[in-house]
Length: 508
Image (cartoon, rainbow, N blue to C red; front, side, top):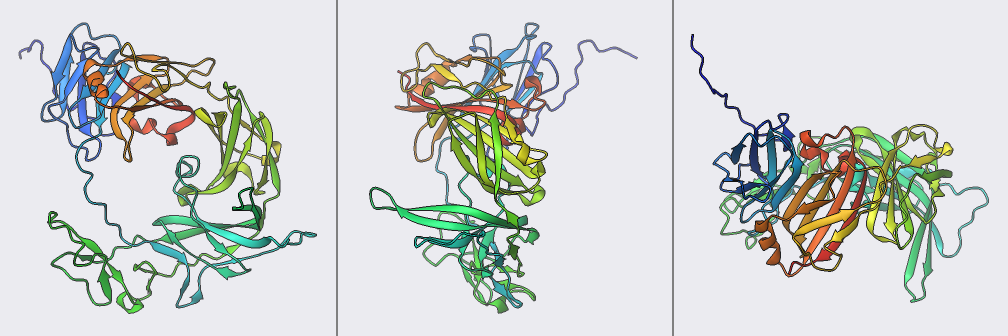
């Protein structure tokens, strides 16, 4: 046998989840760059350690570059950039393998995507009415005024609480105006629940004469376990017509002559076009009838005591926005509502009287109603009548450079926050504002860091934009280890507590 000195074993350091792995550098760091949209390697990109004066290289056809040197035993700053992509910096990382996603930021976005029609819950089918809301009942002694009506608002659950306010749009609902009235709602595919709030709608006018509506919920109902199919209709192209009973989403003048792969979906026009047991819904999709009857059986008369722990006290005074959601496992989440207050203890009134196991509360403390923000998610277990403690909340961030609305000087981004807890991770996003913002630079840092130097190549890119926006996020993430982070830990779903600031600036 023979011994081969200085031998090595090749392995692929790519981590498809993105992030850091492999243990400490110990003299070597392998960097892989992937396209954030399609996941393919990004070759020909420049990667530097620190300011690039000592360690600089280009990625190969696998999107990889390796730096080896006995001096690589302490945390380093890794930056990657290529024309047509957002630059990325990971600061103070000590990991042998690092996979980064680069987001394309140039070129035409392409034609809008084509979607199949949705399925609907409710409506009517062969068996008659399939979506009703029953149980309208005013509390004893309550009579409607001349500007009041009773109604129910019906919703389909959203995939997660992060798709609901304050980060998502208010959920779409349909109004039912009479007891056991009917509804029909579009739905995402998969397991869903349908829920409804019954109450009193009051219409008044403000000082300008505009109508103002308020809704006071009284009862709630939920129907669970609805399996909504994904509709898979036939496809039409410029050379392929739809089968009988269907019509194409696109007309003769809608096809893109520059796109040989252009296609659209065929929409049914009659029930007879669908398979046995299916109906043609109002969007042109074939689906089985989906019953979603809701019984209003839960009272919304609970006042939940909310206690904020260590809320920030910003310069303009705190304005607390507190949200409640009901998590239903794989069926998604229901949006209960939101209250606003300026004190550290208050009541969340007209809350459903249910056990607390499935409820999630989010408090967002604002600086007088604006940035910066501090947010905390609380998953409550137990009796809601005993109250909910939300916190300890993170202190708000304060940008030092660039000064909000001012110029970045010295080539360094700096920020500060006073108090504890110290965050696990810091994320910075610099974009060029627009109808579709153009991402220019993303920075990922450990929570102990409060500054980052702008690489010279990135600084030149920033100078080309007449206006810039900076978003600064600090977050606490359960079981987070910066030297072993994954991209899945860098999003709302992984954070218990985080802060958010957004400011405009320029680079002279």
